[in-house]
Length: 177
Image (cartoon, rainbow, N blue to C red; front, top):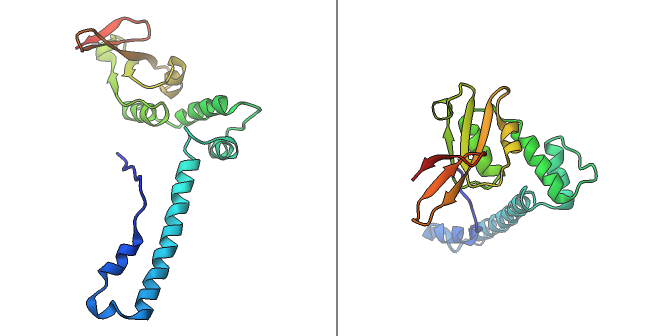
């Protein structure tokens, strides 16, 4: 699990950490102030890189750069089409393990929850169902799956009692809570 950093550090608090005997040393204060200024600039640049090269928000040249990382050329596609293709390309780097597929659903397809049901639930040896609330399609899930393994993309459906049903891609109920 990663930690989302949303605000920058105030490096000027470093001056408050000086021992009493160094608080009035012009050289020491100047050196630490210079460090503080440089670190603030570095941190601002890192935040800018993070924010402008995030797949969901990158546009134009930034999106082209992400595509280059995944060895995917734009080929005249719109940002939306290109972003979807980069997601699909990223999914091919998976090993096909349930944990990897769930991580990809959360990272690439904005799923906040994803439940895996293996052959014991599907009744077939080489098959599984992933029930999630993300934007992945059945085609996306098939790309993430190992060769020869059948996948089903299920969805959560809220009921009028506050519970939910999990359905597979054929809209058959697989879990009721």
